[in-house]
Amino acid sequence: MKAGTAAKNITPPIGANTPVGETTGIHDSLFLKALVLDDGANPVAIVCLDLSGGSAAFCYAMAERIQERTGIQHTLINFSHTHSAPGGGLPGDAGTGEMNRWMEDLNESIPATVGEACENRFSVALRAGRAPVQVGFNRRLPDKDGFVHMAVNENGAVVPWTNVLQICAENGDTRLVLFEHAAHPVIVHGASSLCGADYTGFAVQRINEKLGDDVTAIFAQGCGGNVNGYPLRGGWDKAEEAGHILGDAVIGALPNTTKIIGDSFNVRSTRVMLPAPLPSMEVWHKTHNLLKRIAYERGTAGHELYRGMIGSLEIMRGMIERGEQPESRFDITAVSIGTEWCLITMPQEPFCEYELWVDENAPFDHVMVFGYTNGQMGYVPTDKALARGEKGGYEAGSCPSIRGHALRSQTHAPFAVGIEGMIHDAISSLWNRN
Image 1 (cartoon, rainbow, N blue to C red):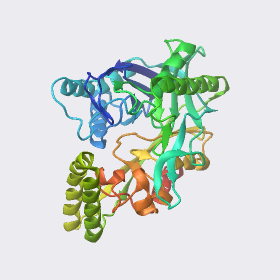
Image 2 (image 1 turned 90 degrees about the horizontal axis):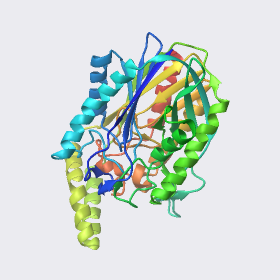
Image 3 (image 1 turned 135 degrees about the vertical axis):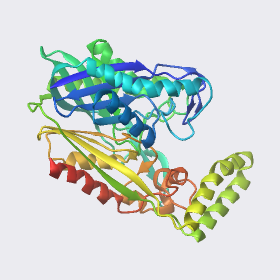
């Protein structure tokens, strides 16, 4: 088994558009980090970016360019989802001048950095482990009427651990640590307009403080669709505190990792099309009237709300009139070594329950789960969340509620109840083929 790594500073210019507005300065640098794992037959490229997200089309294009440059057929592009950074190839990311040049540089840097990682390959031993840690909270809290609001839900599901892949040189020295945790990097969200990696960057810094700068630390985002880093809008000091907690947990996991004896990968992928049924025209009109009423009541703020959402509603109306049945492509990949270790990756923003399900059911000694991989366009809720209908809140609400994110997503409607079983079946089919 061989591995190689490379990194590139991808900090955007001031004024970059993030999920909470334009940046006014730089708090800390953003990085692209590439890890190539090569068993001699099925090399895999894992690319992790300190960005808010990236479209599936962007990720597929990068995978093709990586294959052209390196011959690697399996590329997994994960986004940390920091809200204090722009996206890579997300709709609306196009800018002018410096931002366009930054995007062009990013398009070149990803395949080039993977190529550099290939050149840096050396013989390694792999070790896997886990440590308990929690830097976030479930953010979906139902009120007495069953409507879900974004707030701390102390009884809600979370993923209370970090999974670690430790990569050692032949002499036993740790050379790289790939770690995964599931929580939105939103501790700085709305508390600062500076660009930065949020708690994930501080976790990497902590690991390097303790292990040295010659050890490459790479963060990957897990299934954190319904988990917020804590405290939301806490600012940079709180992000640093959370990052140090996570970094210390990763360091604490290393002495107890287990050596992976197998030396060959099994790489399997599958695709499922998730249905997102549109509402009836009657519900559409009810939604439109609700938007107009709220806009009128809120004055200037309401006008901005209306202007931001009417375009999505008009697109939805056209789709309803044409009788379209939206679906969303959902590609799942499993990279495994015998029954010792498996990495499962999923696109979009899966709820943490998907990671918990994988951990409970996977027939492997050690499992890592990445969300936000090879495309991030919207939330993937559980059936229970979707069954709430208009009460489903930001991540899962349906018309006539205008609070749901799905209204502004590619499908313009939330997924159908039943997708949870479809995803479980797709994942388990990869296990059964191993």
